[in-house]
Each structure stands twice: as C-alpha cells, then as structure tokens.
Length: 125
Figure 1 (cartoon, rainbow, N blue to C red):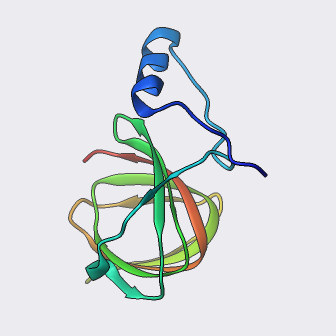
Figure 2: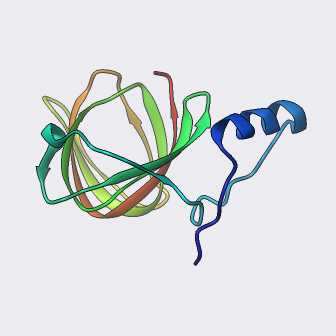
C-alpha cells in the first residue's frame, strides 16, 4: 500500500464545515512523526505519529516498545496491532484490532506495544 496524502487539519475542518462530511482512508493515510519525550520511553525505540482530524479526534500510531503516559479522557478503536496497557493502581487491558477502549483523564499508563498499533481516537481533553 502506498501512503495516501490527506489535506492539512485546517483544510479538513473547512471541508467538514462546508461539505458537512469527509472520509479518511485510516489504514493508508500518511501520518506525521511525533517525537516522544525520551523520559516516556521505558524500553525499545518506539516512535509515534499522528493525523489531527480536529475537535479532539485523530489517528495515532506507535511502533513496538514500552512507553509511559498520563492520559486524557479518551475513547479509541484499534485498527491494527496489539498492545498491553497497564494503569498504575488499576486495570491492565489487552487491545487489538477492533477493540474499543476508554482511558480516564489523569490515568498513569504503561503501554507495552507488541505490534505497531494504529488507532482512531476521540479525546475530551
């Protein structure tokens, strides 16, 4: 599959406002590299990339490794890949293609990414 170029986020917002809808090929779309803070990397050499769809929505991808994070209030659907997400003092969940997951704002997590994971998400901030 070749990467599919998508308009910039401002253009996507304009398309949504003027046309009332747009579609993005989530498995093929080209994402923008997003540098991880080195202090978040616990193991391996994971990288992240994303596409901001506006309004707290987007597509995000992470390569294998172990990272820590402090979450926003988020719901996401895994498109591809697998990971184990451990919440400090709480649950540990396994996610893979087709899974819907919810993360609580402020949750301290450790992501153990087994296979490059791509998700679509909606965040409340």
